[in-house]
Length: 229
Image (tube, rainbow, N blue to C red; front, side, top):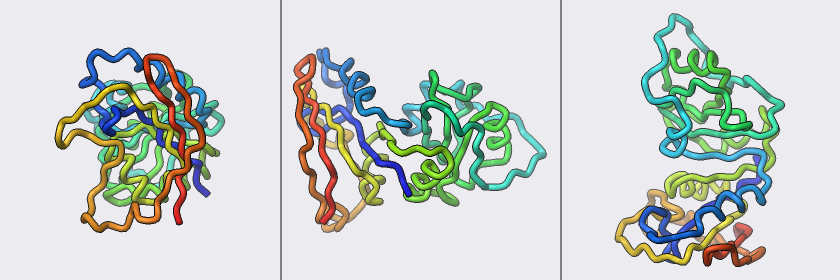
């Protein structure tokens, strides 16, 4: 089994996600308010976002330990979880939680033993997503099985969102539509994945509108169910 996956994002009306380009814009506070309304058991972000919560990127101290490439559960009964995608093992934490959310790191099996030993020392849980790349199907099953995560809120960039979309793992889209236009060619988009123009990933993909709600600052909250036919 896997969690119910909701991609929660804020975009301009042309689907771009670089909020720093929407100046002036007064509606950013609505993002966190809506996040709380979604009532997820866990939230997941990529390495770039999560680096703001980590101690840094200097490697953990060397070790003589040889650790198995099996999932490590440091805490199962947390009220909620923060899931960090860090396939290469770049982030050093020095903490086991973000606020009250126990930290779970998603790794590839290529990370060094020193990194695993450092995570264990910090009290951080970790799961493996594959030998070199992340298999999101495997990761989601592990999060459900090991931590009982039933509802996961994904707040990634376009590449993470696109990878989940391509894997057929997205169940719902929570979209805050900001009153802004970006317009920059090649700017980051809501969903981005590699593929040919005739890639069949999105063929048969439909969104059913569940609700719409005006929010502060001219933001519109749109909530969609993802249907595959």
